[in-house]
Length: 263
Image (cartoon, rainbow, N blue to C red; front, side, top):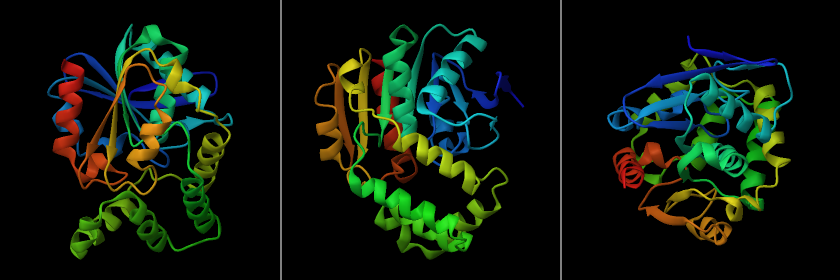
């Protein structure tokens, strides 16, 4: 099991594929397994580096979480792997971590892909996250909580197939590295306490903003406005996709990433 050991964390990561390096950073409550639908497609073109954030998956940390700390983790991981520069792709909170690293260490980043990620978190999105966390902290049934969570992640068509929904719920409940309630609280607090509004203007890397047309957390309009000051960012909207756009539209998601990074 590949692990980067620091003073206060054992950071689990996966490496697969061949080609230029591409680091994938998962979002809130997710880990490296969240890239399952797109990793087989992207790994044909890139060497994928997929870490588990602190407070998720198989990464163990003894320190309070922060966005800056996680960005520093991945600079350290690049050093550990002897990689001078890499492309980076972050989803949702993972995009904020990627932006932070790109702003703090622009010499380490080639191109940046931010998927369903916004520098300004709308009050509605904060309310959704708070309510979902309170359900868990209040002892909500795990299946009920997952079903509530899924409504904010996936496109409406996903729910038309009851068997697919039930299978996804069963798979999530059986996952051995699912995030605990206390770790989710730490990640939520780290996200809430971080002001990312100045990051877009600080980005020097050419940046692709991928967003889902039906994202209930961050709409395309909100993402466009948040990155208006980014000097080298362009927006692409995936038709019909919601917040987990790499699950809703994995082929289109991957083809856009491959085309952008390969230009």
